[in-house]
Image (tube, rainbow, N blue to C red; front, top):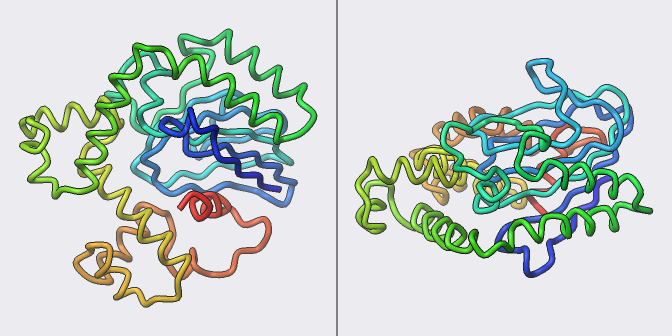
Amino acid sequence: MLLIMSPPPDLAPWVLAGVALHGDSALHASQFPALSDGMLTMRLAGDVHQADGQLLPANALILPHAQPRAYLHLGAVQVLGLILRPAALPCLLGSSLTGLAGCTLPLDTLPDAAHWRHTHQQLAEAPDDTERLARLFSALRPILHAPRHQANLHACQQLIQALASTPLAATPPMLGLSLRQLQRRSQAMLGLTPKQYQATQRMQAALLAALRTPGTGADLAAHHGFFDQSHMARELRRLAGAPLRELRAPQPPHAPYWPLQVGLHLG
C-alpha cells in the first residue's frame, strides 16, 4: 500500500511530499533513479538493506545521489518518508552538503537527534498513516521555520531557477559568479555539481513524460534536449537504472519501481 500526501502550504518551499509505504514480503526491493532531492525516512517495521549490504538506519537522511540506487527488503516493511527539496537539507544537517552527495546519514548523528527519536516514537503510536505523515510534517516545521534558514531558502531557489532556465556556460555570469564559484555553491547547496544536477533533472523530466504519454523515443529526446534517441537511452539507463522499455512496461503490484508512482503524482 502506498500513500502520497502533499505538504502543508507553509512547508511546500521545503518539502515535495510525504510518503507512507507498507510493503508485504512480495516486495523484495525498491529501485530509485538518481535524485536531485533528499529524503527523510523512518522505518517502523522490517529491515531494509542498501546495495552494499549495510542495514539502512531506522531513521535516516538520504542525500541527493547522481546514480540509481536499490534497497533490498527482508520481509514486510513499513516506512514513512518526506521528499525534501534541496533547501531543506542544510537546515537538517547543520552544515553544507559539500562532499556528502550519495550519503545516507542516521538522524541520530544530526543536530536534532533527540527530536527525531521522539518523533519516531510519535509515529509508532499514531493510529494510521495519514496521522503519521501529519506528525512527521509537524516535526519538521520548527527546524525549517527558524529565521536563520530563510536566506538559504532564497539563495537555493535562485540557484535552482538559474540552472533550470539557463545553459550551464551562461549560468555563472547570470548569478554574478565564476565557474569555480558556481561549482562550489552548487555542491554546497544541492550536493551535486551543476552538470550532475541538470542531467538528473533532464532525466527525471524525460522519464516522467515517457510514462505519461505514448510518444516515440525520438520525440522525447528532441523535446528534452538530448542529442538523439540513443543519447537519451544511455542517460536513462545510467541515471534511472533500466532501459526505457522496461520502465514503461506495465508494473505488477510488487514491482521495485514503485517510486516512479511518486514521481508521477508529484509531476
